Length: 257
Length: 289
Image (cartoon, rainbow over all chains, first blue to last red; front, side, top):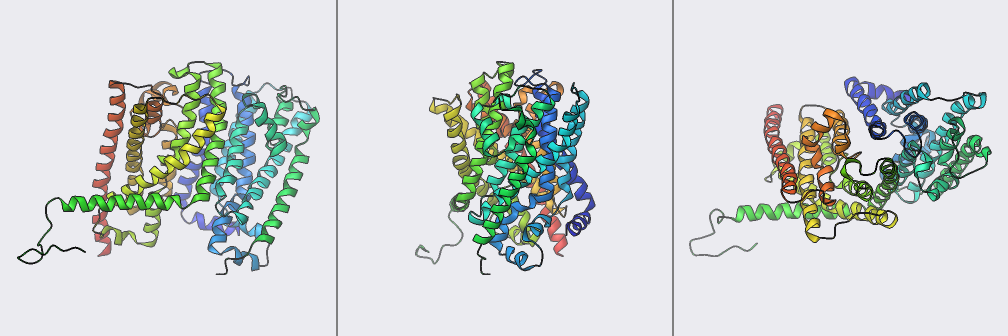
């Protein structure tokens, strides 16, 4: 199905190229702002530009990959209103998989591509003592971050089973969360950082492992184990999202149309 | 309908002035209808205001960190810098920096072909959508502006004007910002007459608009040539100018200059929209045979 949507989009090749380019430019804007900020200072919250680049790149890749795979779930509310979710439920494939593949769009590659470029640059500019655990943490971080953001996309999409217009709430936590993670934890109020560690475990996407990789003190003073705990957080998030999705499907009653 | 029964039969033609009054009534009704229409999406508005608040918090902290490192940067004190974020979040949807509003409606009418019918309505095409967009903006200023502002004021030390006159100047500046924004979006929409799908143009516009409006960073902080060009472009009218008016950075002649800048762009863009519309309508006639 994803292949079908890709072919459909490719039939307007020029429009696709323009959209992909625009997509990369749009997602580059927030890093451009960070670069412009560093025209006026050489540190933000005690962190340097390459360090922010590392945060930006990792959070952008994780969000971008999650958006590519499961971002279409934000259309759930519209689907419920139009009654087209029913069609998906009677097809012999899981509704969630169908929903994700629907309108699968390669245009969404823009964000992870741009974020990967920033990450690559930051890795060359950073001065890190690459011990084996630090090296290993980078792919683990990217994988777990993608899982955590995917869980957020799906988890908050299920809100739309009960509250059809909740699409923007999902954006607050996914896009908002990624924006939060572009910046070092040191610039935010402690309560906010704590909320992001223990409430919605966003900090496990990159803040906590980055503290280990970049050898930075933890503003919350958490045990070092937290810096390696992303896989646990990711597994928990995926489990909770799965529970929510099933609860949502059970609560769902068709529009009757 | 009341008909005047004067000797000499029913009135022939309209008495002078009624045409204008009638048109004004229509536009007012369109604006009011649009205001009401957007106010029915209560849950979506609430969710949107929540998003503006979340982003407001994140960006306000990033600005605080920058101003802590460089106090007084760009001529803004720290309270002004944080207020800048909240005012710009309040304006984001009001002046449709992302595009949208009537743009979505018109694009949909292109898709369905209803656009051809629209052009033959007895109401002016541009005026109709402008009135609707003003109603939308009015609603969004209240709904998606006030709530984040209040949330921001509870946590941060904001610089809010005390003088009612400044508030009036700010509202005027927002009105002009909406006119400029409409003018830009109208031109984008009209490309639909030539392109099958104006989404590409729209995405490019979004980038330019986000960057040059001062939504991301006050354009006074742009380096070099960029910093010299950005304040002259129409997008500066959208966020930078109204926010500076709110922060009372301009007074007297400077204030008049800022408002005049917005007004001039509004006139230019609306007139340009007229011209392009004329060309586009001709094209529809040709296509329609």
